[in-house]
Image 1 (spheres, protein in one colour):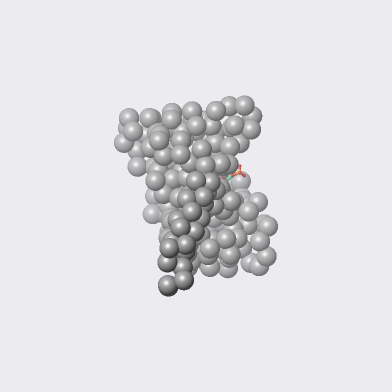
Image 2 (image 1 turned 90 degrees about the vertical axis):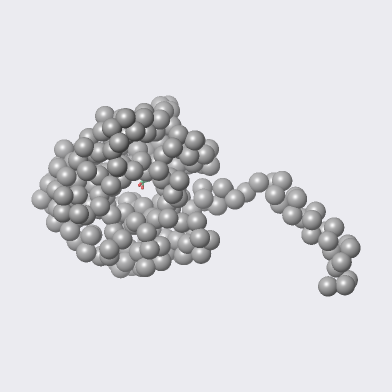
Length: 217
Ligand code: E4P
């Protein structure tokens, strides 16, 4: 399963990329608006660091505007993926941009029916938001199960990009269900590393080693 980070923060991306476990980046207008500097230059820098798929989202809501902005985003770098919302115009734009060979990530997906539309429109990625569903007392991971099953039935090539991941359990569950990718904020990726028994175990190994060999090394 691929791991994407959901942020526009260059420092955080550099830190995670250095670990060698980062496959891509997702951004959205809220995340990019938080960062200083020009958003296009920031996206370019992110592509240079991660050298994998980087999603940049259109903010136009009409078909023509989405196509225009989609072309602008795609021009930033060969790694750019154009993110469009799951609306009628968004699905139309997905079909058109995908037809030109531009990878598209269909976002703001909250039902299996919507994911099916994205796959039919040739999306490279579909982004179901699990955390925001959990927020409204609906099990987000059930949606992932449905989408994976449907895509397998028809051998759609659209990758299931589990978005709005809030904690490590989302990631583990997504992997168990066979989702292709999880995108999560840097703090959630950090949390994947942590286990108290690892810290305690390492401390004990080092202490024992130091007792026996510390003075000799
Ligand atoms: C996905 O691409 C979105 O940027 C993101 O995962 C939304 O997450 P949130 O619900 O935590 O804002």
